[in-house]
Amino acid sequence: MLQVFTTTLLFNPFRLFSSPTPFRVPLFLMSTAAVKRVGTHNGSFHCDEALGCFMIRLTNKFSDAHVVRTRDSQVLDTLDAVLDVGGVYDPVKDRYDHHQKGFDEVFGHGFNRKLSSAGLIYKHFGKEIIAKELHVDEDHPDVQRLFLAVYKSFMEAIDAIDNGINQYDTDQTPRYVNSTHLSSRVGKLNLDWIDPDQSAEKENAAFDRAMDLAGSEFLNSIRSHARSWLPARSIVMECLAASRDIDPSREIMVLDRFCPDDRSKQWRVQAVAIAPDRFESRKALPVQWRGLRDDELSKESGIPGCVFVHMSGFIGGNQTYEGAIAMARAALKL
Image (tube, rainbow, N blue to C red; front, side):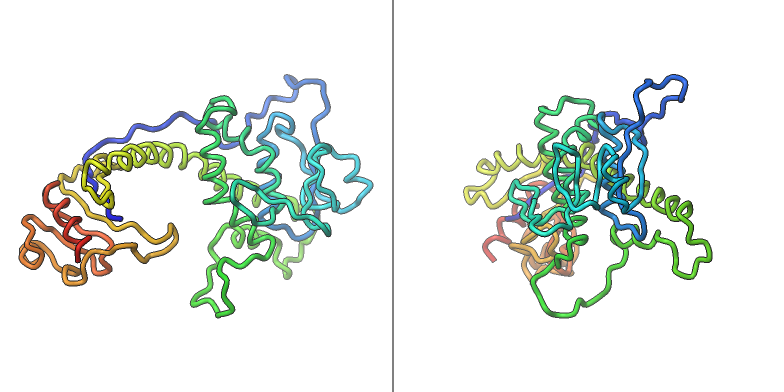
């Protein structure tokens, strides 16, 4: 499928959002109720429990809870919630470990990767967190849309990496090493083995930094989806429904709005990728057009107003809507 789009409209932000961190009420204004305590293990930490602790403290039930890091089962039994340690998954009792034999909980909704502690917290509290960020009720349809989208684009990788699930079904050595993903960056916040100060205080301070890092990227994912993905989704759905009016094949979709605005009056013809994370196109622009520009491209294609076609064939440009449509229709036949 080919898509044709212009670049002329402005984008309005979706909504205002809450601050990145929970509001902390001065001690003398707090309720007399005891501050909740959330437990996770001490020692080396990973992205899943750092993110899980951050997320659970965004909920009403555990707002601003104190984090206790220990493996002492007697201490863990006294805590209000326990993540990534303890050998128990029981959401009724707020126990969210995933290491025990027989654990096979998945997110559902078509996702079948085993969950980490972060995935468990997201599964049970994600809608509440998203609804608070959007300032809407949990039953708002946008909450469910973001709940699934953020899991797919952000949370699933956290779960898979923590559970040792390879991204690809292959026994080949990767062509390059990627140590820039969130789980890797969180891991690098652990104390260096040569650090002379291996105290619990310094270790807990490092864990606080890990929570902040993982949590900020989690909230950024929600906010980016809300500000950009949701409005773009609405545009795409409208244009996809109207594709029958563009070409009888329904293989050409016109995006008559584009964000962000760059004030260009030109049109683009873009091939659809075979998958979101792949570079290959389902139907790339013709080989004989690739790498050509302007008059040379117009002459080769027989279409006036051509601007360029990328060397890979995934995108091209024309000065007019009619020219872009002509390029798309010709590409389908070549």
